[in-house]
Length: 420
Image 1: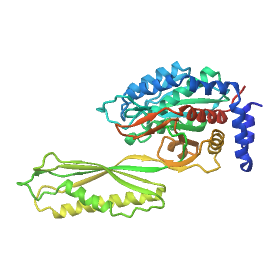
Image 2: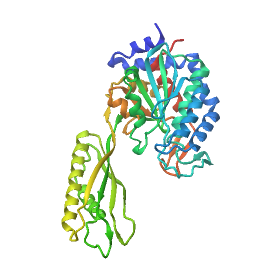
Image 3: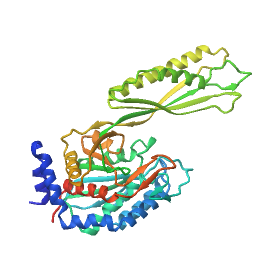
Image 4: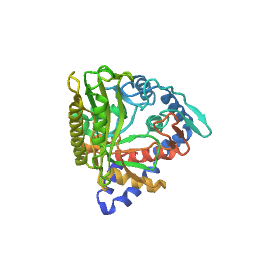
């Protein structure tokens, strides 16, 4: 029997699952190949850091990840992955073949950042920290992906399941998880994936096993437009949006289940002395329960219709009524793993072994997609510390990164099995 067979049998019974998993972790850690891999994280810490800095320095705004994807494709080959390719949407894939090609364990990190194309990216050192937009999210995750692949190659650690490494596009903002959505739309690949780990950011205690649902809308109101004096009395798209906002924000928002409605962007008008011909806003609705998103979507659509009708009634100058369009610009599926999910129990066992306090969280990550499909998946940090995420002041401290990488490595080996 291969080592993974022992691991699998030890994890069958819930009553004995955690102690068995802990024993498995201890046995895995003692394997010579695993010891060589964990030593790599310390020995090559500077190489890992330089990869992170290099990746962060390559712009990857939403829908413009091409340059960074090219670099990652080169690095996937350099660290020894096989069948390296890019799919139709821009994801970079590489495999580390196992004895069982029909059994995949996926590990991924998203390529894109939240920052627009005009953002000046300069990574600089301030004390023990490295500062720059995207240095942690997701420079840390991508560096972890390369470090894991190279450590496995140089340690000659061979797993029973095939490991699929993916650097995916479209995690942030209006990317709408398009990279993961496309990846899992391939039915043949989806059926082979037994577990998935998305590496996002730094926090090595975080374990995102609950996928936060969300739906995003763009509301566009159009009208004839005109001069502020000569055409006063024409219906005004901005005034209609203001009426709609008042109604939307009056809708009750529960604290249980936790729910949020955010108006994040508003645009409209060409000059202070012009009645705008168009105005728009973008709304993000999130909830722990899908039915709350549906309720707030209904309230949103009613608010827009009533606001436009009220503005058209107010108008007293002929010229045509306002018209509204409500577009869905993003929808992220939700769900959550049961506490007894094998991947959670393995992470708990590894964390207990390493002295990490597991913190199970709910968030919107690349793990949303596989979780919604019934595949065991989590999102985790790649180690180290970070702060000021999604800002120009974002920072990363690599101290302790090797613990986060070891955590992921041990989980991968337990999930995939290893022949020694």
